[in-house]
Length: 312
Image (tube, rainbow, N blue to C red):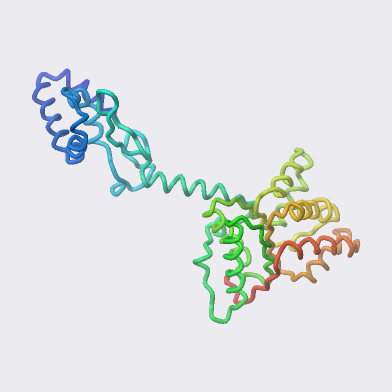
């Protein structure tokens, strides 16, 4: 938008300057918001102040003061995108102060909300999940229990406690990952940072991290995030090194630091332990698998999710 001072410069050069100037002055002074401001601050407004401030007053009149007619932040017509003006007295003139409009406040809040939820290989629709929008059918008691415990977790964590996470297990498509996404969104609404990690892809990425020396950095981020959610654990083909030096290290650190951790899996505890007992080479290492499972059991409450496949 062209600055208001430029409009006045072009006005001064016109032969009918005086008439147009008086017309603009009347337009400004007849504005209801300007009138209300002048009335409210009548004791502070000295002679000649209105004339000295006419450019600012004209700018105020021509800027949007609310967002009702604004279709989106990107289509904002004001001089400062996402800000609307407010009249203030500065010394011997009436000046403008620009404040964030409701549309920009909502936009900034959403961006801040999104930044609190980090993810690795999680679909975008999962990241938009909301606890209060998850459907629960009459016979799905396990689903109701999971949502109830999820809400309890958010409330306790928000009050300064460090409750256990959840170990959600069940068949394909019952909504395990979706519930994790909803918990992450609920945490973000309370300014709590979390990370959702799709374990099979994360493990594959780590295998390639030796080449660019980013392995320690990636593991460190996952280890230290305030709330971690490991999705689909047990779906990966895991080597002894992945199990012991990566997964084991992450879980050990989080257990010692009392950092809440959530899990989802198609396996119950017994099945996951069996899966972790065998390396890619076929080596059987039950003791090391049991060590991982002890950490998981210590960190998360197991809940079996039953019900129909919601992907169908």
